[in-house]
Length: 247
Image 1 (cartoon, one colour):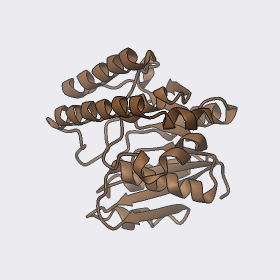
Image 2 (cartoon, helix red, strand yellow):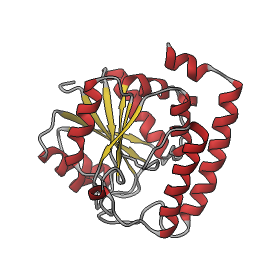
Image 3 (cartoon, one colour):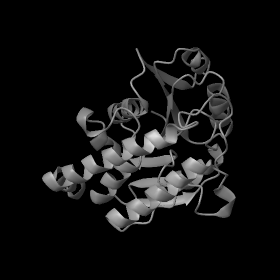
Image 4 (tube, one colour):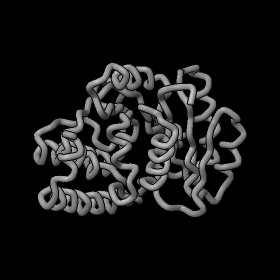
């Protein structure tokens, strides 16, 4: 481990994007290490990621889900002793230019989770589809109502996380395998993890089809709502999360 920051990139069938993403990160010349978690891709994602000798590549034998890929990254970071990780998408939507602000905020101390937001400044936003935009506004309102905290971009996948957070979620049953999102964010707020947003510029994906294309966002919203309900019930039934966060 040469650097304090590990970039964790979950990837599934991103052969057309992963090379561009990795080249952008390496060209940025930041004090980072890079981990690609190939989540059982059926294309050449793994092959293309392994072309970059500076990049560590771990592969699942089959597609386990975005959350499972993130958790593999968490476990790797715990095992290798990284104090911070940054979750970075494999589809080209995130910019390496936004990493220094996230890194600086984490290194300053006192913040457990730093989120890149499209809506903190006007420069960061890009036009979203009608359903996705409605989903972002809905989850923003729901989080505010349930926790009292305003998060401008609750579905942002660009997140810096301290070891205090990812070591907790590295345990198998504490993190959903499919697609952790607003449900986990609500849980983290209830656990008293400190969260801050910084401006981020996000682009449309370079190639391929988003998992939220078409009417999938509506299905996704229903799944997340059910997950949020489970989080709230579980939080009332146990104080394990609060005990951990305050420990």
